[in-house]
Image (tube, rainbow, N blue to C red; front, side, top):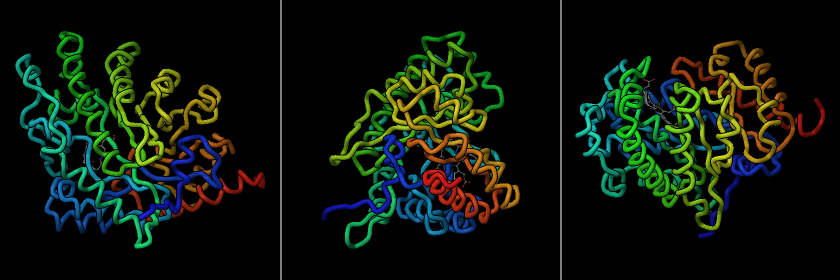
Amino acid sequence: MAQTLLNDTFLRALLRQPTDYTPIWLMRQAGRYLPEYNATRSRAGSFLGLAKNPDYATEVTLQPLERYPLDAAILFSDILTIPDAMGLGLSFQAGEGPKFAHPVRTEADVARLAVPDIDATLGYVTDAVRAIRRALTDGEGRQRVPLIGFSGSPWTLACYMVEGGGSDDFRTVKSMLYARPDLMERILEVNAQAVAAYLNAQIEAGAQAVMIFDTWGGALADGIYQRFSLAYIARVVAALKREHDGARVPVITFTKGGGLWLDEIANTGVDAVGLDWTVNLGRARERVGDRVALQGNLDPNVLFASPAAIREQARSVLNSYGAHPGHVFNLGHGISQFTPPESVAELVDEVHRHSRALRAGSV
Ligand code: CP3
């Protein structure tokens, strides 16, 4: 059956084509701030129980779309599925974040590391992509909004693999980077191959855009970032399938804290660059022109303010970018679990309303 996309605003904006309004989606839009997410997670038993079951993953992916007129869905999963598939033994302790039973610390650990067989180890993710595409599509083949697939960047995955979990100072992973750059490069090489294969499998299963999350690139020094994070992102981007089913598959990359490296990030061959709230979108656009689209960048903490303040801050982000094509509205990082759900309704409404007015020249 022929498939039609009812709302392609998000994909058009990523390709810098004109749109009637600025599309919006939110990093971690399916998550703990939604009571229905918490209810499904308790039925699933745990976060990993949710993420590894395609039916549950589909259910929670759609939850924010039932509440708000968001312009894209994002696969419900996690960036740590790849190191889990490499056999490092992922678990989530309540209130403590992720933990790996077998972190990568020694030369022997690094030598053992291999690109996982995606079908054999991560089939639950590609199954979820297919199930979500079906759930987004009605009986006449009409799909509500596009589906985003994602992965962590090679460097951000390495942070968790070497530290064995989250970290405040990245002491272990940076010690390895400076003392044994050869070991670090070997980890990053394996990760880059795994990330490219994983994203290509998501694209083949039906992901219509993909995003690389480089959450910890901004923890690196200038020069070190380019060599140990950005170079491997560029390798992943070069290995991706950019077309599937006759449609272009845009690639977004997001280095939190990476605003100072915007020009270099824009030169990696991506279609769009995600930015956090430290960056002025108007000045960023002057630097990159229409080489890439920009995604972001409201401070997630704005969602704790009053409806009037949320709307004002949303307008300020939109005004800063201006009425040009090529902006996807998002937060500058994932939504907080403590966010009042009503705040998101205010934000989505104001982004749609004000961006239409901006284009009409009536503000
Ligand atoms: O955006 C979406 O809605 C899609 C789902 C998604 C999750 N994690 C679900 C999740 C995405 C895109 C991610 C990415 C991710 N995961 C990143 C990169 C983006 C970022 O936030 O910086 C990182 C660094 C991770 C690793 C990770 N996963 C951590 C550190 C944690 C614990 C965080 C915490 O707040 O406890 C997770 C767990 C996780 N991944 C949750 C969700 C909804 C919360 C777990 C739960 O329900 O208990």
